[in-house]
Amino acid sequence: MNKNLRRGLLSLAVAGTVLAALPIPSMAAAKVTIMVGGINKMVYLPAKLAEQLGYFKEEGLDVELQSQPAGVDAENELLAGAVQAVVGFYDHAIDLQTKGKEITAITILGQVPGEVELVSTKAAPHFQSMADAKGKTLGVTGLGSSTNFLTQYLASRHGISSKQFSVLPVGADNTFIAAMKQGRIDAGMTTEPTASLLLKTGDAQVLVDMRTVEGTVKALGGLYPASSVYVQRSWLNSHKEEAQKLARAFVRTLRFINTHSAEQIAEKMPKDYYGSNKALYIQALNNSLPMYSQDGKMPKGGPETVLSVLSGFNPNVKGKHVDLSKTYTDEFVNAVK
Image (cartoon, rainbow, N blue to C red):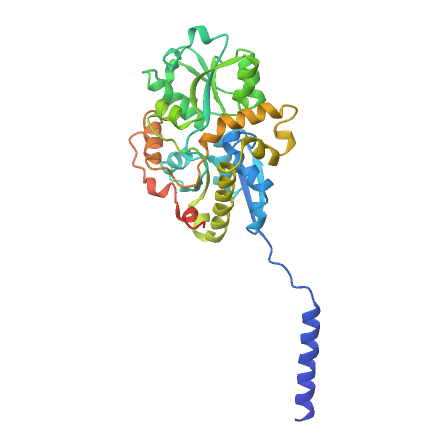
């Protein structure tokens, strides 16, 4: 063996030894920003719970959760490209398709809305059902939000058009509670734990309950898939690996919810979610457990019910052709073992 060859082999051996001694760089986790349409709402609890359980990290995702008080604001952030995904109501996917925007739900978190139409105790004697909504002021989280869609539909089922009552955007949580207590709204649509807080203080009564399958079918005529994880179709087509990881993290979270008690779930949540009244938070969570999906799949007939609700009054959807198959996909949840 000549000297040059020996020197070359020796150099390679030394280089190999040095490289072997160097730390192997870890693959950077994929960054995904998710906007939640009100992160404290129990309808969207799976987002924070997935983070608390460490499921995003286990999937190799670097997830940042942000919050907007209304789903319509979260939707706008997605369309602007400021975030990659939204945890919000599925009905936005139908509404946006009629405006030329392609949004696809990749995991269904709630098989029912989880919403409650509350009437203030002061207004209750003259407000026994949505048939009494004429001339009243009804609170919603935001104009164009899912609560706005549902409020108008519930009234329309009693022959009352949206011109016959006033809608006031009052947000959620404390701002909703204040609007109810101050008499700025006669009734309003909200979620847990806000509903349980107002019921406990005696400031409100239940008018329409869509936290359960039975209540939702009675109010809307069928299952109404609501809280979901949705993304822009253009992002989905180029980020299928990230979409699969998100779906897996959320399906694992749904399985955790469906196999643990409200007390056990509450233990996993940050303390500021229940503050000084953990018992009330657990009670509200117990009220909410029936709404969560078990597998993240779109419930049969669900998209048709949502389309029916929106077509009933929403001028964007009424009379328009909607390809429901493009508004959701079970491809990713089906791949979760």
